[in-house]
Length: 233
Image 1 (cartoon, rainbow, N blue to C red):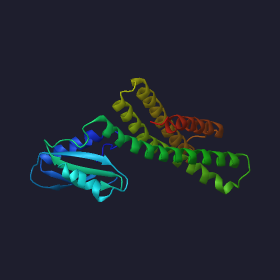
Image 2 (cartoon, rainbow, N blue to C red; image 1 turned 90 degrees about the vertical axis):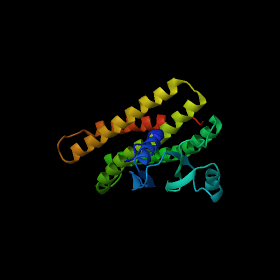
Image 3 (cartoon, rainbow, N blue to C red; image 1 turned 30 degrees about the vertical axis):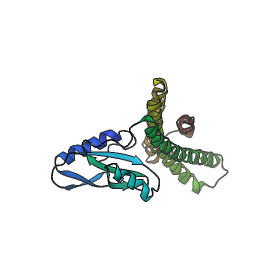
Image 4 (tube, rainbow, N blue to C red; image 1 turned 135 degrees about the vertical axis):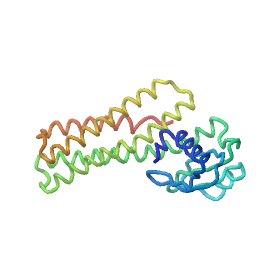
């Protein structure tokens, strides 16, 4: 299973190295996990890089540096392997910083998009509440609001992760990272609470007043603002 490429990529790469020493070599990567194949034990190190739709020159540069291409997740995340003592690809902060800035900008676009969708569905649900939209659309907008609120979490996680890594490389203050971790935790808790209350209400286990639900949604939107629309790096 993937532990979290955007959060703990080094742990994942070390895990793959550990498997290689036991004779299990990375073959391909999927959305949820890695596929390994049986081989002779090898002393390998793995490296994960981000590049949207890379060209042949990109892979050639890695190959010339002693790193062999292994597999990709989509057209953005690429994994390479090399012998244990091979020199790292990124040997200075500037090149590593550029790597994460590119991914941060991509992740921020996804986070903002999911945030805007949540705002849209919340507005439509309010129109339904006050009779401006036919009843048939009420449950549809409610379900879409829950889904978009949940998606915010999974789009904001990479955004925060890359932002924290950029701050770490730049040597920025620890307070910024701590504040975003707090907001990130609150966003997850609030979203899970929304989902939990929605299904309790849907299956008549609990009768929740609409105003409570809307307040929770509004809080989620505010948290989305703080976590999605953060300053440029």
